[in-house]
Image 1: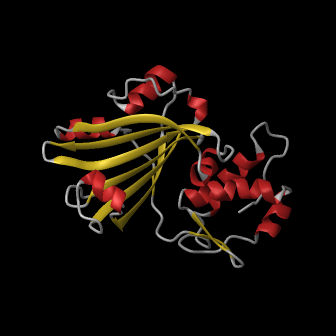
Image 2 (image 1 turned 90 degrees about the vertical axis):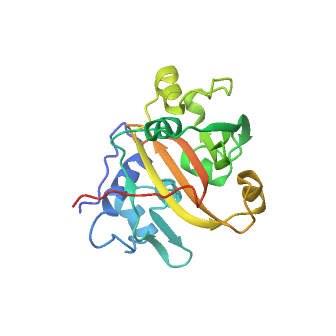
Length: 242
């Protein structure tokens, strides 16, 4: 692979490096656990600063595509699945399609300071105000999922929107922002005290944790979403065609 970027291009260097890294991690020598070239060597090869390189690697690290080992190097995460959505659905649309009637037990927008994870994904200053939308949803038997969504400030959301509407309808119709790609991380976890209280389960019961790193057609970050699902209510399936 030709490790090269265009220094005369109007595309920011970190964006070019990010694109290059996404291509690199699909190569046989790096895929599923291979180590990338040393940071200092790669920066020198591309003619960029290590800070520029880190800006790109940080984003992929927080998407779960790279793993940084202190004192060892940066390697490609094993068995990483990146979902390129053919049909984008919000939770509301997904439940409606399945004929599942749900209700909102809590719907709360508020402004908070971006933590390290959110700021690195959004490529903004840590502590910068971002809109968070917290939602607790379920059915007649009680709540079964708790979501937190964080939105990039550039979108222009105020928190005064009618969030009873499907979220991605609001983004597309009101703000002309099109969520196009979602990189996902899915894992099992024991419910914390707070999660157990929200979902009305016992502390330590299993929950499904699903993270979305949502991007627009230009691969620019729009939303970070994390959901905590009651394990006995959801089965996550992936259809793979050879």
